[in-house]
Structures are given as C-alpha cells and as structure tokens.
Image 1 (cartoon, one colour):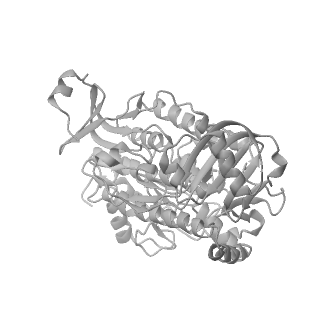
Image 2 (cartoon, helix red, strand yellow; image 1 turned 90 degrees about the vertical axis):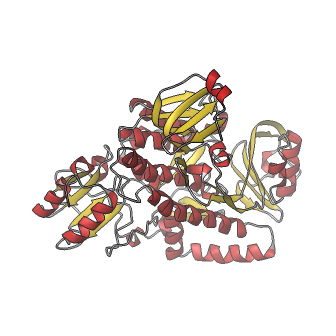
Image 3 (tube, helix red, strand yellow; image 1 turned 45 degrees about the vertical axis):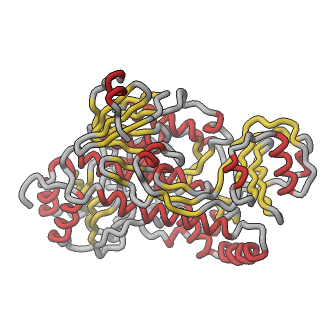
Amino acid sequence: MKVTPESKKSAQNHSTHDIIISGAGPVGLFLACELALAKCSVLILEKAESPHSPLKQMPFGIRGLSATTIEALYRRGLLKELEIHKRLKNPHSNAVQGPRRQVGHFAGIPFHDGDIDTSQWRYRLPNSPPTSLISEMQELEAVLTRGAEALGVVIKRGLAITHFHQTGDEVTVNSGDQYFKGKWLVGCDGSRSVVRKAGGFEFAGTEPEFTGYTTQVDIADPWKLSPGRNVTSTGMYLQSQPGYVVIQDFDGGAFHNSEKPITLEHVQEVLRRISNTDVTISALHLATTWTDRARQATTYRNGRILLAGDAAHIHAPLGGQGLNLGLGDAMNLGWKLAATIREKAPEGLLDSYYTERHPIGAQVLDWSRAQVAIMKPDPYARALNAIIRDLMNTRDGATYVAGRVWGIFTHYNLGGHHPLVGHSAPNFELENGAKIAELMHDGQGILLDFDKNDSLKTLAGEYGNQIRYISGNAKDRVSVSAVLIRPDGIIAWACDNNPDCIELEKAAGRWFVCNQRC
C-alpha cells in the first residue's frame, strides 16, 4: 500500500528504526526482545489502547507452554519471572493426582505422566526445564513487556497500521496521521493480520468444521452437566471449573463467521443441544468464539515484510500449540534478522527462517486437523477415536503423543551426520556448575568443547563475538565431545569423537560470518 502525498504532508515524522513490529502480543514482544538483545532499534505498534483484557486473564487467558517455549524463555533468563505455573495446576485436567496424573491430551483423549517413557528422549538431560507449564497470557505479556522495555524497545499503543509502503531500502508505515520508517516490518498482528493482507501474502488452507465457544457463565443447575470433557452425539462440551464452559458445535463455523453477537440465549441453546440437557444459564459474563480454520501463508517474506505467529498461520487451539508455534517463530527469526541488519549474515540466512519454520507450522496445522477429524460426532470419527485412544494407552503411544504436544520432537533439517544436529541443545551442566542454557542469555552462538581442543578455540576466535568458546567437561556429555549451538539454541554441528574441523568450518560458515579469511 502507498503513502499519499497528502498523508505525508499532514503526518508527523519519526526517526527510522531498524525494525517495526505490528502487534504487542507475546510473539511481537518476544521477537522485539531478541532483536533488541542484538542491539537493533525496535518499534512496536499495537492497535489496542491497553494491554489488559479479561480474555488474557484466568480462566480465558490460560495457556500451556511447551518444552520449546520453556527452553527459549530459560535461555534468555525470562522463565524465572513467570509465577503463575508455580501456584496453578492444569485447569483442564480432571484426573486425580498420582502416578497417572493427566498432563495433556490429543483430541480430548488424555495422556498421563506415568505412561511416558522419557528414556526414549536420549538427549533430554535430567536438569532440563519442565516439558510443559501452565501460563497466563497477561502475565506472559507483562514479563515480555518488561524485558523489551529494559532493552530499549519502544512500544506505542493505540496505533493501528493503516497503510505501509516498501522500497528497496526501507518501509514506511502509516497509522492514522502518523508515519514511521523502518528497515524492516514484521507482522505479528494475529489471525486477521493487516500486514499479511496488505502485504499481498497468500493464506492457503482449509475451512472450519465447527464453532468453538469459550464462556464464563452462571449456571442455575450445574449438576445437570457432567464434569470434564464430554463428547456427545452432537459435539463436545467441557466444564473444567465452576462457571467456565467450552463448547464445540460442528456447524461448519457458521456462527463464528456470521459475526452475530454472542447472547445468553444463544449460548444456552447451543449448550442444551450439545449436552442433551435442559441446563439453564442465569448469567453470561464473558464469551468468545473460535474455529478450527487452518491456514498458512505460502511464504513468510515479501521483500522487507515478514510474518510471524498467527499472522503466518492459524489453526484450532486444541492442545494449545498456537502460542508455542508463534514464539518459536520469534526465536528463529530474531537472531537471523538482527544479523542481516548488522551485515553479519551469511548468504541465505534470512531465507532459512521460512525454510525451517514453514514445515513446523504445516505439521502443527495437520496435527490440529487430525484432532478435529476424530472429534466429529459421527460413527467414522468415533471408530478412529477408539483406535487412537487404545494406542495412547500404550507406553510408546503416550510417549509419542507427549513428544509431539510438548515439542520434544521439533527438528530442523540442517543436514549433518550427527543425530543431535537440528535439535534443541541439551542443557549441559559443566563441572563448575554452569549450565549451558544459562550461558545463552546474551544471544551469542556457542562452541562447546568438552576436550579443550586448541583448534576449536582458534576457529571460534575467527568469528569474534558471534561465537563464544566454552570448554570444560560436563557432568553428562551424552557421548558427544563438542557441539556448535546457534543463538536460538539449535545444534548446528556435533561430534562424538575427534572433531572434523572441515565439517565444523562448513557449519559455522553457514550460520555466522567469519571475521577473517577462513
């Protein structure tokens, strides 16, 4: 979209930033933190006047954080600031505490921690952070906002992007009668992203099967509803705590798409039909609708415009993977975009954001579609549901599903011969007590050398402050002798015995720029 001469004349000019981010949700805030950590100047424009909303608070704002997100926050020193998980148990779990405590679900089918064989996750060390935690959107955003502002990020609220125009060197962004200039623009502005629509991105995918309702209500006769998650002949309803009811009505998304107001009478009609009861709602306090529409941008970049989070992909919030997927985008994109701005990016580095994250997004969309397929109120879905339930009641089945839900199996195809390459780095603990995740707070790459090899130290030095060389034995080396870790915590190279310096140089040169002739 273009900036008109008239708008330029009346607009208030602002200094140029390295990056403008549209959206101050968790994804935009975390991306801003990553960029500012790398000394980039960042401006966030957020259309909402206030960061506070009932939909971000309990119980609406409860989200599950997966292993990949927890590790990312831990590696930046932010995990310790989240408090709600320390005092709140999973509100969606109705299982009794004990050896078979419910810790997640697939399409409403629970899996339990006592059934998960963590020994199959060979490289996940005992000192790793938890595989899953409960969080609240409001608290997470507050933590990320404090982190971003401490790093110098400018956040302007009440400013919705109305137009933008890119050239070969910069992007001009309009918000009403104000305009801002940046070298790059990143859309983190949600499922109805203005940046995606105005930027000409194709958003391909599948249409919804249902309208979902998340409600806070007063029920005159709550005993008429069964506790927990209930699949019926017409849909599903979940009553996890007093007054908090979730409903899935397989109407093809008709009500959500109609944009009609959500009234007490409508919610009561849907709940009665789905629950097959004459339950009475005496008050409707809050309600929102959602669907299982699954769409993904066919590219995440158009010139100097990039997408991340729900702006790049949307799907049903079953299993809570949307937030984690978006934060993974931010962790992957941040250091690559920063290196590009600092002219420290090898050829193709920024393009690897799309090639790495698009397949991960596609997997999550298919995971969501698969859940919807076995939740439909028809005989075929019920038959598949029974088979999946039997498989999940096996040790291998529970381990596989937990690994997928928690992101343990997240992997980038980076080539290389070692099985660790492309996976999240284990939280190695050195003999002096230092843990690798805690040594990544500054966002540098790390060459970790357990055998104090002088040639590795020399190679790391050729990359200046891009790669930090760390040596010393670890309490558990999981049989490796050295690893190269990217700033996002992903293993770029590893070896079990004597290092092949030629292979290491190739791997380092793929992700970092050598300060000397290498």
